[in-house]
Image (cartoon, rainbow, N blue to C red; front, side, top):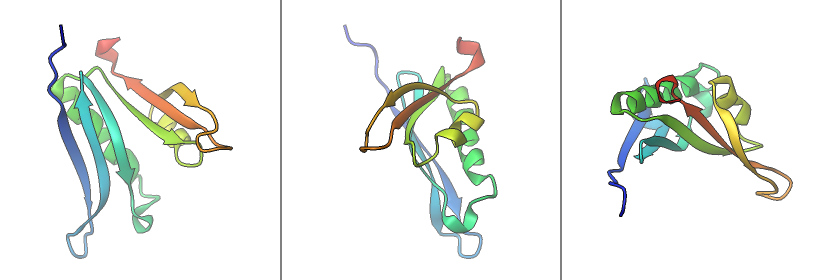
Length: 115
């Protein structure tokens, strides 16, 4: 018997204050009560302002309101594993040499009510 499946998508957008155009943001999908962050992009001119952290927290709040048990994502060693760890994410998997010489990290954050 298959488990009921009702995926939902969420986007948290970054708008350029000068022209109102979308310049970045976060894209995620909820599968089986877990939110998977597929993509996050903060344009260089907006970096260093904690916008990335706000994007992730907004997605987490959305997931909590939907009743998710947690959030997971993957990132590369040369990208941002320490960024996510600073937001309370823990590594649950590592694929070494993907790409060669680097690791691909799988991180999760389990919401307290669901442990």
